[in-house]
Length: 316
Image (cartoon, rainbow, N blue to C red; front, side):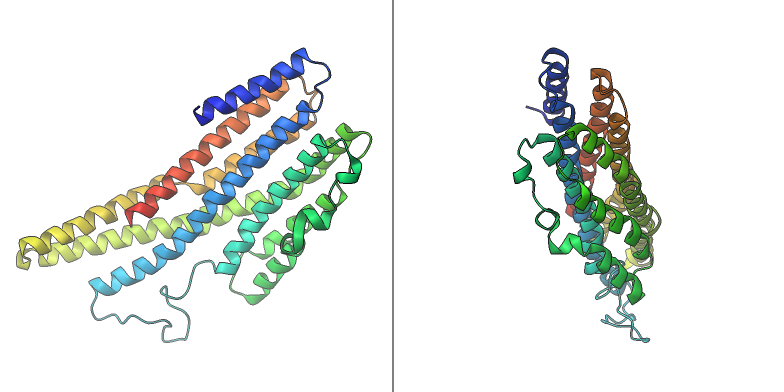
């Protein structure tokens, strides 16, 4: 069954449960929050692949430039001792992991809400230490260390909202008034979740995306210049090899221009905003339908972004 149809049927089933069966109150939360968590998990996977491809892409550009300019040495560090693109990265492995962990924290927050919505046994409701684990519990410390190192210019902006969300997850407890507890948790989580997603989107839109697009454009320009300068002295096989490389570089450039992972994070923020709106609504079928529609839009963005990442990877 196609994914979009499957999600639509799930939303319809939930609406029917709310409309027909008065005792199906937990579906007001369990289904939409579960769908939200699944979409967050999918976005972590897609964005993780994007960042990992970015690191490989930086090395490829550096080596292609060395090939086209024989006077340039291939070095691990430059004259000032700083890592070249062969060894260095726009975001270090630690910085990338921390950002993806920030998204996983949002997913854990959604899982905590889903546990609260679906559990009927207070004794089985996991402690904060069990839910978060050591990595996420100390995530704000990780960002603090990255900010202090001077190698990650935007890490400091994650510290506040990450700390707030970690604390909130610890305060989400199972109460007799479960609906009220969920509504309160979503209300308190609104600001830190939004700030984390805003900063993630800003990193992608102002640092990562422009760097990739500019680099692909520069590589394409160098390949074109190299071909035009030497084409009359090339054998047919050599011309074919250079033309094939130009075609690959052109594909990569246009894919970089077309891909927009920042819009994926924006879609996640819209889905979260829809959940917040749903929490403060009367939670009638029409309110749930609006939430389901926002999740559907976001899920489509996840699928499109995943396809784009695979295309960029395969073009190398």
